[in-house]
Image (cartoon, rainbow, N blue to C red):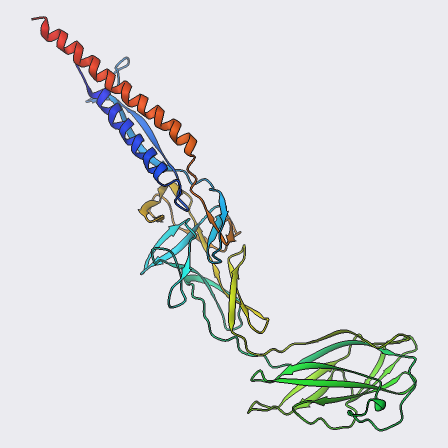
Length: 407
């Protein structure tokens, strides 16, 4: 008489209880994926193959313990480096040259500025080129550089003004310190090659019908007192000509503190002469001073954008994700990490929200996908299965005892 079926059932139920217990133990583990125990029946083999029809099997066995890579709930956090993947994919980590994959997005900065997991693995992604653009290619360790953002020299001032057509022409010589010698003025701060600020003041003097002279001064340099340009308007109030031609108007500014001399173009395209009060509708310049990193943010596309004290932003890198044709073929490594195997296929690496890869949600983490209610019900079921298999062994023992007692 065989005890094999009952024993295999006990082993299978015990393994299922182990799996359920591990799921429950990791119900609060960020990025954890629940597993299920899958069984297969067992039949004895003979020389001619499987036993004949009508033969009882010899029990069960655990065919695999499969992880369920379903989406877990996303919970907001206060750490700007926390990331949750909404959709498919894994974070790609570099552990001293060994690559692993994880759904746990609890990251922080180490002393060298690298983005690391709680176990010290470096998060990988794409770096940036000299132009500040993401350089897609082979992923590398992502590092947040705290170097100052270099200044950018101003090359152009774009101004859109309205000059009052109703004012009376002025014939007196222009004097920046005498408001009676000009009608209106406005200013813009420009920057030299070292990021030193210079305030350029422009003045507008109506000299005849539809004709205006433009003068300029600078707080840190001398601009010749002569008009830098003459602007004429059509009868409809739009610019007709700008002299000297072509527009924009070039202003040469001697720099200070050892910076090089530079030229700024004053572009008045869009300026009008209407019968209404003087107004500055738009005034912008394209330079800025240097800035220190004050913070950074991670977008849904994985791009890390740095914020600087000069009000500018700069791309610092891009987080990449990896996916597999068969995630169940990944080898669990512990510490919320998996390794690529022949069964999983090669990693498909790319930017978030491309192909089968999901989006990244910053300042958030993905909860474990363990359903506690379902696990407790499964535990009761596994316990009953264990008890039932124990009962078959007990019954077979009683039958055997009866047979022995026949003598």
